[in-house]
Length: 173
View 1 (cartoon, rainbow, N blue to C red):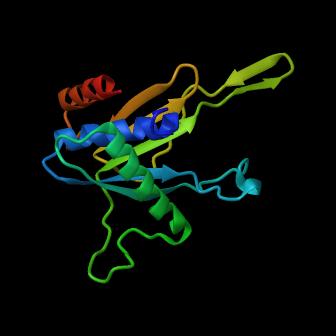
View 2 (tube, rainbow, N blue to C red):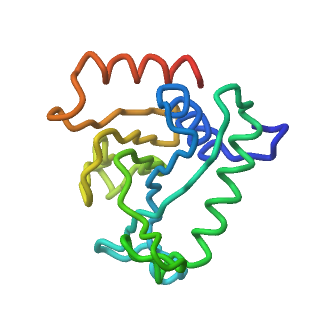
């Protein structure tokens, strides 16, 4: 990731895209990526649901290199990020090509720090917010240590398949 000037989040996301491409027969991969929706500094500490899922699309050969994945992911994210506030699933700027909500997602955020109130200190150890349904979603928490959890729809993905995906992701990372 240092060679490609990528952040830890970008590297984790590129690994997720690379794995999905390995497991898929599709050359074009579209993954929903969570944007926190807090574009303005005043909103950073605001309570409420501002988050929005945005599409990230990559077209990869089976024998792709991680650097290629990073480059495509960054380009796609930048293009999507530019029109993030006006983006609506099912609409597109190209007539006849609606963007449908993907079945695969990626979410990454910093771990919450310690809240200190004198003699009492607290830390959020688990936060679960479900805003949309995915068949498979990777949730990463940046901190010491970095953690990753796989969330999946048990109606479409078995526990054994989820364990295989998690194991393979660990190998890719």
